[in-house]
Image 1 (cartoon, rainbow, N blue to C red):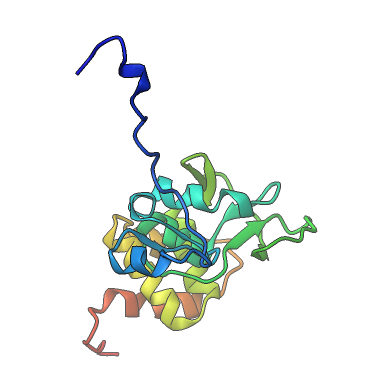
Image 2: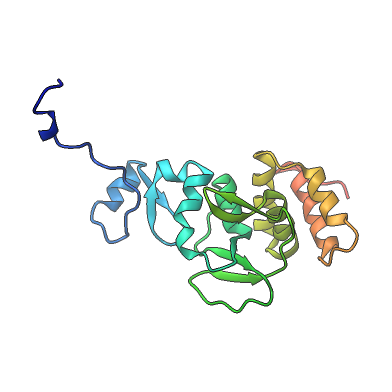
Length: 190
């Protein structure tokens, strides 16, 4: 009903954007599927957790100057999979920073970082290469599979690992990439 007194109606409640672990009703919200965990140890509405932009926005506060979300955190932002307890960042090697996240020092080339919801995040290709080169085998394979399922071309990953002039542990990474290409539950015939 519209009329002269509609301004007296209460506005609709705002969206639930976050809930701390100390909230009494958090268990109920979790049980009802309304909130889920974030890498910062908090909980957020599933609406925010349902998109890369929403997930990235939840991690904006851990960014340091010149940093980007990286490795398992970037997988979580891109795919919603491979949940981590602590955010991981990458910064240039000459930066000395401290913060609430795990910091990796690496050079970032053109195209290595993409903005997701305004939050700098390593690209899916860069994320997969870093996973295969530096992260423990189980998480590297799972994270790379998640990125491939969401559209990353496995051939592009292989090409990047074989590109001349790259100083990366390519032998290990290529072995893990073979595991990524092998469907789960099947063994490769090597």
